[in-house]
Length: 395
Image (cartoon, rainbow, N blue to C red; front, side):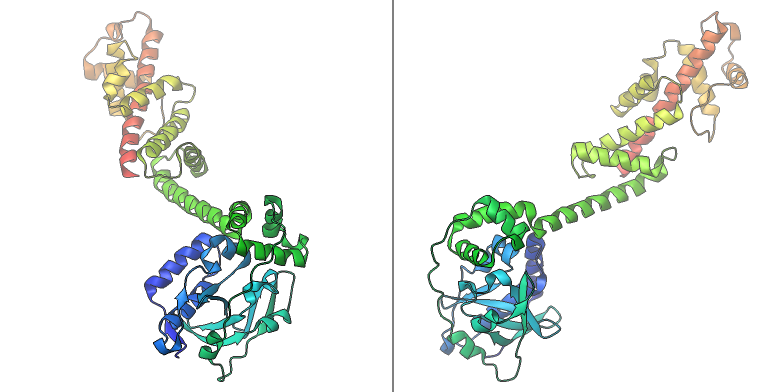
């Protein structure tokens, strides 16, 4: 029987997907696949049949105990990866349980695209192994005398699980998060219960949903993905909002994410971001002005109204609005709102061929200037709204 097998790239990708879910290393998953492929490819005369219902099919057992077995002819056999130091290790809680009744097959992986079964470690060898509180390890004999056929044909079904006290949720939580607090004998009893009882595994899954490394990895992965999305979006927005600091833009994006979810591509998310930044920009542009009215103009323009119509809803003095528009059209490269100067008003009078006495339909000169400045503020808000509508399409 040949022990050397190659693993198809698609199978490797499926293995990567699974370990991404469980938060466990890829190597054990690949080692188990090597054993499965070896058994499936064995001669019919060998009488070896790969079966389902391995403990390694249960994600909660994989996360909690790093189980990694296959079932051959009805017997469970563990699979371990040969380390670079020639040693293999297993969770201490598994030693002395029925899980290791058939020992472990040892696989040497070849650069992630295949491997070879090179040794077998017996139950007795595991019981004599040394290690720390969490695991035990020992060197694997990889001499040429190893016979995979003999090792597999000697497998035997595990004995019946002993009847022991069922754990509650609190005990399983400690088993996951603080295993050292549980005596070794009770750890082995819990392992047997978990293998024997589906209801116990359901409780284990609940504990793992809060405390497992896989859960932490998924949280960190999601956080990392979200942070990357935020940074990309801020990179796009920063050049378009020169008056707002990058940190302030990031704060707006993060706040919108909390309210609308982490999908910057969604139209609702985009609109909320640009409106939030519009408000921040209005505050900086129209210092001391009526920002609330300016934002009302922004809302109208974003809803589809023209700038002239939106501003006209608030500025009743139409002549003042015309003067303000003439002044604004004459400004080039002006950042931020600036009140109309006497020269600008005079120039607008000339361009519109108006007499100053009737320019704003007011006999109060200051009231006329105030109307012009009010219109300028709102026209500035309208321009920002038009630019924001364009930005919304670009991000």
